[in-house]
Image (cartoon, rainbow, N blue to C red):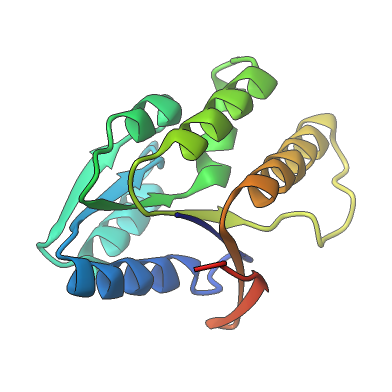
Amino acid sequence: MATLVLGGARSGKTRYALMRAEALAAVTDGRLTMIATAEAFDDEMRARIRRHQDERSAAWTTREAPHDLATALGALTPGQIAVVDCLTLWLSNTMAAGRDVEAEIAALCDAVAACPCPLLLVSNEVGWGIVPDNALARAFRDHAGRLHQRLAAQIDEAVLIVAGLPLTIKPSNF
């Protein structure tokens, strides 16, 4: 089962995904895995990463996957419950590395479809603002929109977080 958790910056997406994963682990005895995509290039980002780490209990195992997210998902096993935080950071890493974004998105979608365990995918909804004034920002917004549409079409559930409140936009069939 895969859930896409979308929302704006600081909307409570990660907190929601962690709570959902921990609740599922409590009833299934699943092993909690965080797949982190952030890279700490400066002090501010290091502090953000540290705050996110502090939000998680010792029950969590963290796997860093700033670039090879499909590979990280392919390494998951039954009995795990995984949270990916976040897809938009992974996308910006992919673009900055000069990788073929469409091929990487296709590989990610394949890995999500093949994932043998519950998966919560956290991502920023970036398409509600103004049209960016530069080509790179427009490309990022467009890639993120296409990524979200592709994932939403194939996942089991999609939840939009607004002001810390979840709004189910694609209900699970479970």
